[in-house]
Length: 204
Image 1 (cartoon, helix red, strand yellow):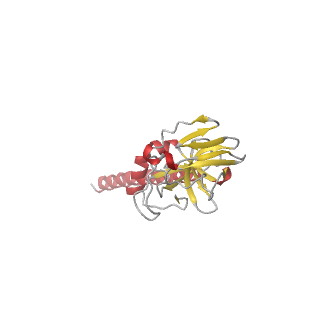
Image 2 (cartoon, helix red, strand yellow):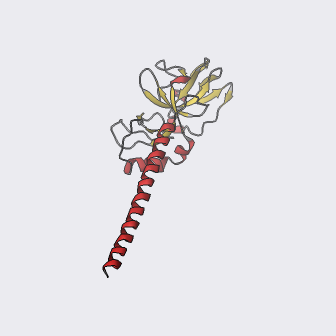
Image 3 (spheres, rainbow, N blue to C red):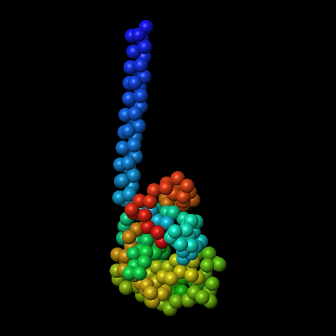
């Protein structure tokens, strides 16, 4: 009887040991994947209303209510990309409208890129008052980019003397398309589940 008890106990201990080993390996795998993910992407907390219509911004970096998105670490944006930019003044998030050699002008809220009307479905009518959105034609210098927020009424961007056409190498990240597609889920996860604040976080 005692041998049966000992054998049963040993089997139970072996099962517990196997389960503990599997859990340990799972934790190691998750940690490695998280580190690998952090090497490619960083989390962005959106602040301000300059990207309204596309991204919801919190009233301040310490307030709740902003969207979370992930940007991959790259400084070679394309036209239309939403990018994270480190300027001389602050970190901002805007959309790349034009690159070196392109011409840009805005007439009554309508964007002309290289002489042709550019469709911008991401810009809402209430964020683009025609009388407030005009910009004389310029040619973007090589190595620079012309960026604007999707909320044209309030965004301080390349139309302003504060920034003008910004160096492409100011780009520190490009918001991933999958992150935009899953924005609601990403925001919910980071708001209610992920309580950590990794060093790679950026707030804009």
